[in-house]
Amino acid sequence: APGVFQLASLLVELDPSDEASRILCADALYQMGCVEEAHKLLSVALSRNPQRSPILARLALLQLKRGFMYDGNQLLKKVIRIGDTSCLLPIMDIFKDEDRRLMQRHCHVRALTILKNKQED
Image (tube, rainbow, N blue to C red; front, top):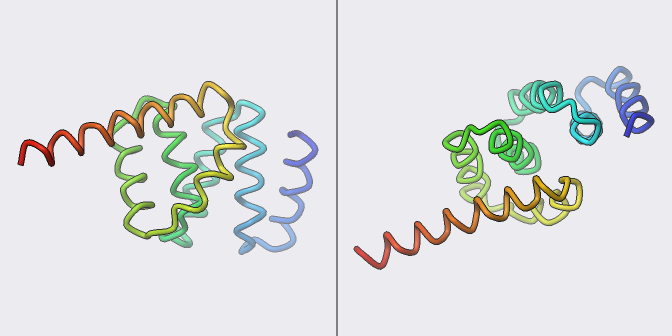
């Protein structure tokens, strides 16, 4: 992860508008345990392109990890509304096991809640 971070940082310096390099930097920071720095980097990337599912999904995990369930839910809803959920499976490979379980458990509980509410209606 440190080598990936250094390379991605150089790529961002060469082209500050390169979103893929920013995401790669954020993923490397996350892998190194620098969650706050990854969050800041993704927030900047999101401000430039607020409809990017890969950024939104990563931010959702970081929000859940930080205990901000409402914010995580809102980001996940936005990913679903955009309709580009194809980014979720590759991102799950990046997440650490504990965070992957957190995201899966959270999504499962939310899905059950939605289904239960629809049945009651």
